[in-house]
Length: 168
Image (cartoon, rainbow, N blue to C red; front, top):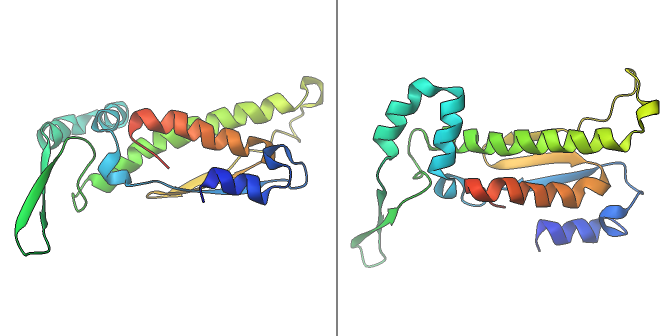
């Protein structure tokens, strides 16, 4: 069962329900280290730590050969043109850097939606829009969103993540 189907099943009336104040969404990124875009990781690195670009270019300019042992005991390999191999010293860091870009934009977009729901005349410093918390540990993400934003959060995550190789 996909997360999208689960949202519809667990929220009476789907994402338009008003019976719950918030929905806790769990995102498990599929094969994050292996599928994240090197181009996106390089872009994020250039924005945050440009001094690491020469090292990145040296390590990831070419495709990797990934070796594995077959059932008969012989060794074989495949070419990995994107993503980072499991066990690579920087794979979790670079993958998380790219995921952070996705989650940061999702957070900004969710805040904009929250602000648009509050009529301009009713906004005060003591009643700001509820900030939708989004947290992650490596490739496991949680988001606490209003029910009306649950489908939006999933769809927007797909839109933001797909070009960067980050998929649910």
